[in-house]
Image (cartoon, rainbow, N blue to C red):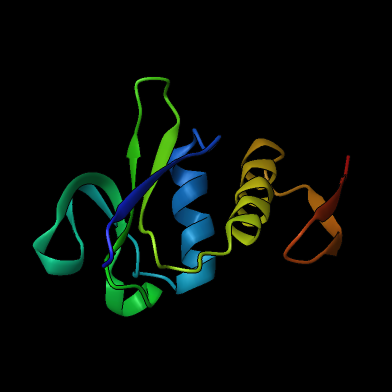
Length: 120
């Protein structure tokens, strides 16, 4: 039987997280605000960001909520095979883009790592 798993992350910037998820799932596929994530068999979890199950391919929605430490917790169906490393790479890319005002280039990237160069 499927159930929700809560995974701690280092993601603290909402806009970078939304942008990274939209790169993965498409523009307009990430809902944000005060939401309810729905899981298998009627399970519900409060969330700040949600990618609905029909988009992420899980038995339940993929969701994130802000923890007391200011970082987002991932709430996902425990059976969902989620590419954590890809989301982390995309989050880092979005974080650098925001902080450098887009003045960087990607030298090398795959789902495991990213190499960036900041341009003056």
